[in-house]
Length: 169
Image 1 (cartoon, rainbow, N blue to C red):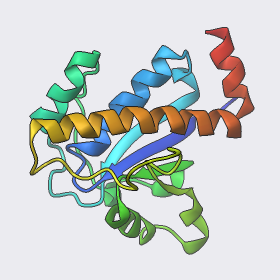
Image 2: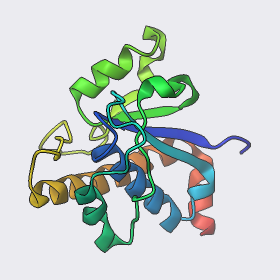
Image 3: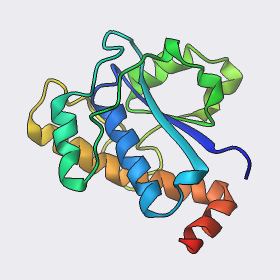
Image 4: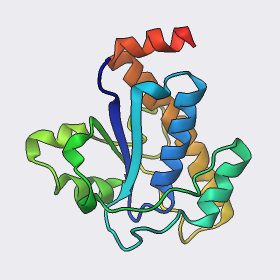
């Protein structure tokens, strides 16, 4: 494989959900020996927080899992080229609508809700925990771990060379 599969996770301000998803998915890839096959990043649909670190509660929620997202810095989708990404994962319907405005209609098939591949899911969206409690951040963490596993399963189905890479690990 010459080029990595490019994935981006997108939420509203890129300070809670999307950097958490980026960190969790990156760690999942690392643990499966697949990190070299991917380029993973995150962004927000708005750039109010551009340059800011993740919310401290998001950082703390991932700390027990050995995932450090403290060096991430927020950026907005208008600061990046969405066409460069093979897969765009959004947290909710508002994110989907905002991102779809940045792409031609023919390109919106690359946008997916992060919970889309989770069978038997109880909800379609990852709600923003920003105004919530530590418990809300843990719920988001658990949802993102589950979603990351299912996303990777889908990617292995779509890119057969990944299964070989996983077996070599």
